[in-house]
Length: 325
Image 1 (cartoon, rainbow, N blue to C red):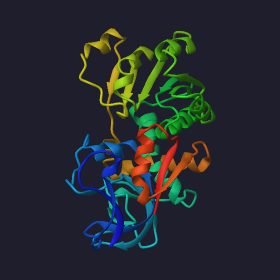
Image 2 (cartoon, one colour):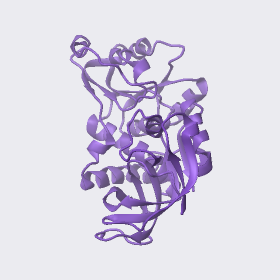
Image 3 (cartoon, rainbow, N blue to C red):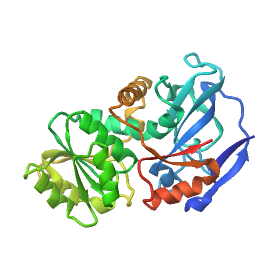
Image 4 (cartoon, rainbow, N blue to C red):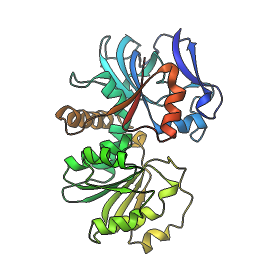
C-alpha cells in the first residue's frame, strides 16, 4: 500500500482525497519510482474539475509531473536501472509516494538538478522550452509578451526569453508580483487590473508591438492580446486559467495584421522519445548554467494537496509549488 491523492468525483479542491492504494509490480516497459517530489500545476486543477477528462476514468490519482528514484524495473526496460534518478511528465498519477511510470517517458536527471528542482520544473520548464524554441523561435531584439509573468511558467518564460536576448513585457496582478517578474528577467511589467495592457504595450514598444504573445490566461485576455501583436505576429495560447477562449471568427486574425494563432501542447511536441529527451536536456542545460532559476515558493505535503490547489486557484502563489513525499 502506498499513500496517494485520488479524485473519486470531479469538483473543487475538496475532492482531493488522501488515502492508501495498492501498487502492483511494474509491468512491461515500466519502472517503479519512489517519488521525492511532485509538481503542482494549473493543468492538475483542470483534470480535478473535469474540464479535461481523465484518460483512466474515476477514480484517478492526480498530478502530472514528479521526480524520484527508480526502485524496480519491469520487463523490456533496458535504458533505466534501479537507483537511477529520474523525472517525468506523465498524464495523471504523480500525487503519490510511489508509482509505476512508462520508462520511455522518464528522463535521467543530471547531478546538477535536484529532485525538487525537477519536480518544480519539468512540466513548466519543458513547456517554456517548446514555446520559446519550437512553437515560435525567440531571438535577440524581439519584443516578447508574457501574460501572468509572475506565475510558474511565466517566471521561466521571462528568464529564458531574457537569456535569448529578447525584450520581455509581462502582465502581473500586483506591485509585489511586478517586482518578482522584474527580478526574473521581465523588462517591463503591466498591472493588468489597473492598466490597458494593449495600450501600454504600444507605448512601451513605441508602436512597434510584439512578435509573439504567450498566454496562459485564456478567456479574459482574448481578443485584446491580439492588439499587442505586430503584423504577422503569433498568438500562442497554452493555458486557460480564466476559462477557455470561446469560438471566434478566424477573420479577426486577418483584420489585425495577418496574425498566426496556435494552441500547442507538450504532449504533441514531446510525443517522440528523442524530442522529449532533447527538450528536457535543453531545459537542464539552462537551469544548470543558472540562466533559468527555479523559484520553489510553496511546499506542501501530500496530505495538503487540497490547500495547494486552493492557493493556486486563488492566485495566492508565485513561482512553482510542489508536494513533498
